[in-house]
Image (cartoon, rainbow, N blue to C red):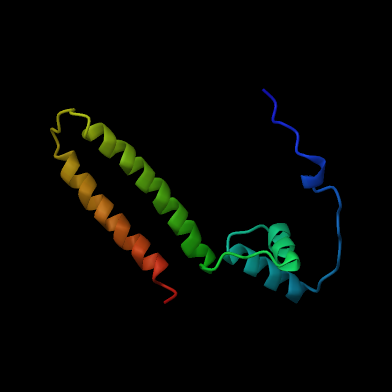
Length: 115
């Protein structure tokens, strides 16, 4: 099934091109990357007065946070299986809880890094 077509009023059909210096480009791309937006979306929001994400995160911390979230998702799936009544021959539940606590500490360190 094909994706439904956007309403004509919501389509972005107009292209605006403008020049910036290398220094300005680096600033713009760093700002956009820091808050997790594409350059186009960052400029669009800045120019139209729409809100930008409030929390600025270092790009490396952001990538680490995304990876930790993926690991956490996998751990949640494992925990769901272990809680389904399957025998626990290797003490998996205790190990999962320890890993979950470590992940929560790492996430807390990342989010509190700016404070």
